[in-house]
Length: 372
Ligand code: MTE
Ligand code: MO
Image 1: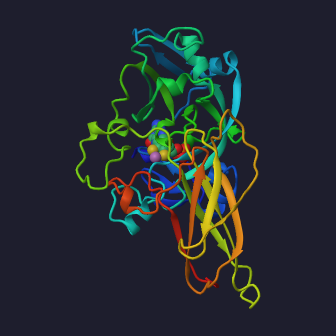
Image 2: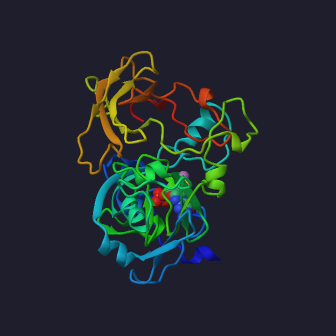
Image 3: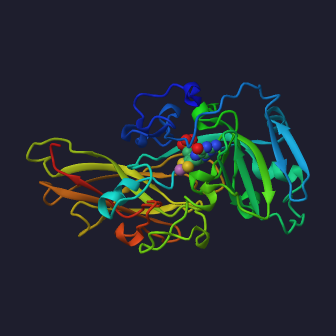
């Protein structure tokens, strides 16, 4: 049983499957700007690899389009390249999939609620610096025509890729990370080395990284060529070659807590609602709209300040709304967000339905009754 050597896990994680471990961040932990490592959501397709080599022996290899291969130990990465700290939100493409099942129809995949998302300060070296050293994408140097994609391979056979444009973008901040929130990378999150691709679907942030291939092709893995794609709401049996793989994330938001201060007459209609809003591609959240009457009337939530690190807005914004509802007896709270490109969320899940339940970003609705 390869799962026997999986690490111990925080009991407050909401476990969807134990082997492999797939577990959501509990709502209490979603209110922190940076998610504590023990409650950062876990999405493992297989077991957690056991790595015993020290930093001076664990090697990352990089294969170039001309077949040339370079390699670096983690110790060399740390010594030879500038180390950066960047705050990044990772979100699974299946975050809120359960809402799509409930409000549209059945989807295949882990039935995540709003906790397949977390944020951390990642520390590592920039992929662009390492690639430039290996011979690809240095500033002023022409890219070989067959350098189109950068493929990442994990120790347990998981793999994915990103376009070369993201990999070598000076403001793209793609990291080869060895620390998370100031601590050594936990085993569940990729020890000893993982890629962190800010602004993209978390499926591209390959854990337990052992090999990078610069190629004219995307990763051949099913996680690149199949699962993480979307189709029209009418398509039930997709031709997987016909859609692009998900890279930058669309905008989304969610309510993570609702507090009603008291049940006295005066406080009866008062409530405080909190949550997060996030958009991919480094697009900043401009505004969060909230409705306490199912979407008939709207007001704006307050965006909470925080200290982010990185070239773009790679992190979620947390928000808070304190207000009253006309009749709180039984109502539906709704949230939707807008990013700096004025992208906003679709109203219904039906309109974005796909059988895999990817990118379930419709207005987040939570039913509410005071005293509950
Ligand atoms: N990398 C490897 N090697 N194996 C995996 O199963 N899962 C991917 C990605 N990288 C995965 C991986 C998916 S789908 C997600 S959502 C994120 O890792 C989850 O990262 P986390 O477990 O650190 O939250
Ligand atoms: Mo994922």
